[in-house]
Length: 594
Image (cartoon, rainbow, N blue to C red; front, side, top):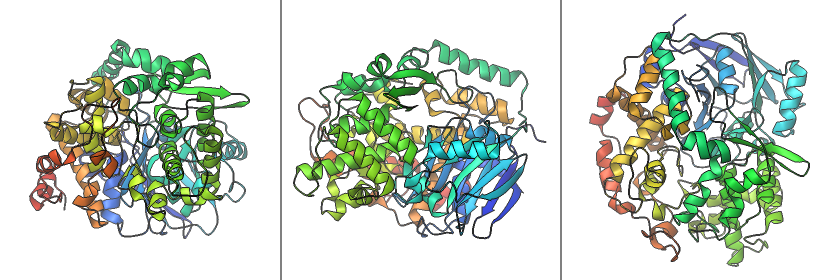
């Protein structure tokens, strides 16, 4: 058995015929795409037809862990779900933590590749290097919480880890997510809807197979490096640990880049009422952490008789300031509904905010208003079961707004709703939103780290000069982080040489910094090529007209509008693409892409 952090097996599941088969992990792929998101991108690039409808039975759905997943490396718990997004039409990957990815590897599999559509609902059970499909008709229609409880009972083991969909995925809501371990979400892009289209209700994983690592003194040093950095950092040992991800909310608001009322404003008057600090004082019951995490940024909260995991920063923003709501208990209830129904909180909240604006402008007849918390919670429920106006909203904000003649009211890029940072005051992060290969997204290249937090260097958030270089760098590095199986929050304390040392220690690689970034660049180009073949081009690398043409109010950021035209040409040049944003033959040869 190789000592390199890999289980060494990829499971293929054909749901149409009820068959499973196992193949080895191709040795060259370990260096060229690592695992996780990179492995999924490689599989889709080689095997998938990007023109297939995401709900076509032959669309591939890949669950993939990285070599650091379950390695004992602090924050090494992540896995990715990769497919063609029903929300955007692009390739997408949704990243999640908890323990599911670790148990998938301990059951003997680095990845599970699903194709086809089962005649009836099924569960995939992974254990001891074996895989079986079981009837799941009894679980169809259950919430994610009910599904986990019932499956553990029926499998007779409380330790089994489960990734499942709720009613939203079953009904093909385009922002449906996959929930694992009770409240961790593979959230963005509608991966849960693809899972639902295949009638795959859940994957249950439990294993006792030890994965071997390169080990030795280098591995011990790598673990100590991360622990010490996390302990020494005022962020990971302070605010993030004490108040969770929402500890950043008041800072973003003070900068004038907290989008409010569907990005009509850059500040929220009552931000302190929905801050991480306020949550700690009121509804927080305990901290929680993913496997091998020493930070514990997760929150468990309670509102009346209801209890659940979250809400996180993005969720608080989506159902709070973006919907004009300043009540944490209402926001938490919306979050609980999303977890149970299996909905991405960012896209769900942003789509509701879009509908609220259209209603207040008299474009739709439904009576929706910013600040109406009870109605917002009810809309979440309607989206999850596609009831009433929820049936339209389940298509996402771009389709909803376009249906009513106002697509510009969808605050999205490539059809995916933007997260909780206004690009009019964060020029580099806006460039990442526009060029991201999975649509509107911050974690695919979070230039917000230097623009907001000053890490690893402080960048002027209003400047455009140099942002193309930084955007490419963060995008390539993020691709490596996702593919490795470690949490993106490590970027708060680690930098490129640290990731080189960690991968070399766990996998026995002989990477240098150039090799690491070249691998990330290769993964990015594989995803880009998938999108090119799916019909995406230069015109898709942009942001909504509101962000390009409508200045923020006086309380907003100095930059006023997002100035993408000042950065896009240089960005393409830095990537070695042509003037239309297409990878050149020379660049693909350089990266070893056929």
